Each structure stands twice: as structure tokens, then as C-alpha cells.
Image (tube, rainbow, N blue to C red):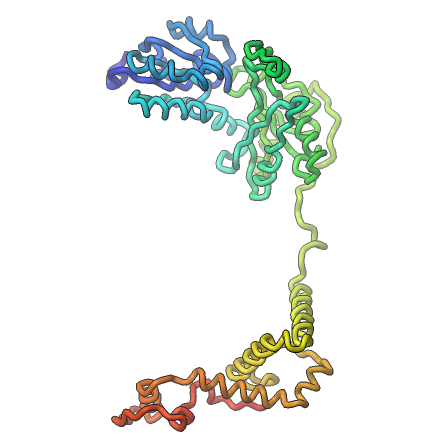
Length: 437
């Protein structure tokens, strides 16, 4: 090992990322750690390399122990106990913490006093940039499971919809089933009878999306929706294919592993890359039935609200509401008082409605004309007087200060208590305007 590796002394549990393709994707530091460890585990259920463990053993010079889901989730304590007295390497395809299971293993080891160290590597989360879509435009990542007869999870649908609403792309990680027990065997108690490995391919995922759309009916994953299939990323036979969901559902992309991307609104450069990877160029021998042209969901001119119309309707709706409230007798008494106060405040601030202030809208209604004839103007004047009294400065010091302003600095030492007569002599600044009703 190099001098850089000697800095890590003692018993350590190492999390080493292997990259995406084969045994040679491991980093130099990761390889040094593997060669120096006493035992090497290979996590073997969240992802797989393009080569078997035999090639890894030859290249690493160490025995590689496959750690399936049961080993990692139910018997992780064995790995942790070994790390207390030995150097243990836990190998992960891609980057170690792309799956939360590995983070759980690390925190559990640390809680038991085991030192840990991480060696990162490439994963599908950053290799997806090879499709030409900008990484920082990706939203939340979703997982798509293989549909079973009695289990068809569709939670990915709403997450893709949420991403598209805010203009983001969606990366869809496709299901991997390695050393899984079927539902029928579980019911029979045969939890040691495992199925053959199965992988959800991009074309199968597209067909499941179309099935989901038929059930959800929200127009999120229609047949014409653009999509991109990322196949065997990082491997020599890497393949990226673009097309509609309906078209990709008819294509054969070859061996796994596959990832699917549902683009959101694309930048002009992203559109060029989408066309660059179109299936007519990348898989010219396959001729899928073309899907209808994709039309982005934009609001048509007929559905866009007209500001003038909306303002007009809002005014009509408000006046209708006022008529209904004020016509309801005693129950509307409080509302009427508030309306009178608002009218009085308006008159106080702007003066004459016809000449002094902004338009409040005119309503020609027989009931309002009757209210004017029955002393409506007198009530408004009374409300104005009450409002003016409320806005007057209160207290002898405020009275004194107001008198000083009115008399241009003439001081008055008399500190008599306020009286109704003193208060009536004080005129607020906004009372200087004339009002004609």
C-alpha cells in the first residue's frame, strides 16, 4: 500500500464504491484498501456489475463474499462484529451511499465503536448526465417496481407529475430482483426457495407507465410523452435511446441494467441531445409504431383570464354580495355599519366622490336611492364626525402640541384638562378638504 493508505490504522469497516462497469472501474485507493483487507463483502442486491465475482477475485487477489439482502439487513451485526478485530471491505456497485441500506450499516457500526471510511465512485446518479440533460434540472428520483399480479405500486406517477409541474426532469430507477422469494412460496412458508434474477427493462417500464396512465387519467405519462432509456451506463456497450413512451415501449434495449428518464421542459441544447439520441438514429433497425406528436401542456389563450374581464366580474360579484348582505335586515346590521364607516373614511380622505377621489363604482339601484332619500347623507355626515373625533390627538400634552403647531410655535403654559370644547377646536390635517355630498 501507498503512504497515503498507511494513515488509516487499526480495524476499520471500509465502504468502497466499484463504479458501474467491471472490475477495473474501482479507484486506485479503493483497490489498495481491498488488497489490504482481511475480508471482502460484495453487496449483491441493489445493483450488479457487468462481470461476475470470479473476475473480481482474480483482479483484486481476494475472495469475494456475496452479501444479499438478507445478509445486509438481517445479519449485518456479523459484519460489524468482524470489523472490531479485522479490516473489512464492503464493496458497493456504483457509489456506496446511493442506497440508504448502506448508510444504515455505517451508522450502526459507528454506534458500536467501529471506525468507518468511505471511498466514493461513479454511480447512475451522475452518469445519467451522459444523456444530455442537465443534472441540476433533475427533481426527485423515483423507483419503478416490477408489476406483480397482486402488487402494482404506482406511487411514482404523482412524483413525476410534481417534477413536471416545477419544470424538472425525473430519473426512474428500475427494479432489480435478485434472490427474491415469490409471494406463493411465502404463503407456503418456503422462504428459502428463491426465484431467478429478474430485471425491469426500459421497455417494460414504459408499458407499466402506460398502464398506470390508463388508471390515473391525469395526462402525466401519455403515449406521446418524451422519454430517454439509459442502458448499461459506463459499460463498453452503453446505449442511450430517446423517443416517446409509446415508441420506447416497443423497442428491445438488450441486457440490463436500464434506467429511464422522463424529461421536463427542455433547454434548446437538451432538445438537440434528445434528437441526437433519437431511436431512429441509435436503433435504426427497429421500427416502432410512431406515437402522436407530443404537445406540451400549456394554457391556451381561451383559458387565460382576461384582466379587464376578471376585474369587471369581480366588481359585479362584490356588488351582488353587498346587495345580498344589506338586504337581509337585522342580520346585516353589523355589515352595514362597517360599510358606512368605510364610506365615511373614503369621504374624509378623498372629499367629493365625483371630483376628489378614485372611482368606487356606481350602482344605480332603487333601494340605494331610497336609502339616500331616508337620511343616508345624514348618517354619512355623522359617521364622518365620529371618525374625526377618533383621529384627534388624545390627552392634554397632545392638545398642547397640536396648539403649538397651529399657532406657529406660540407656547401656552396652561395645562388644564381636556374638555369637549378644546377637542372641538382641534382640526386633523385631513379635515382641511371641503366635502360636498
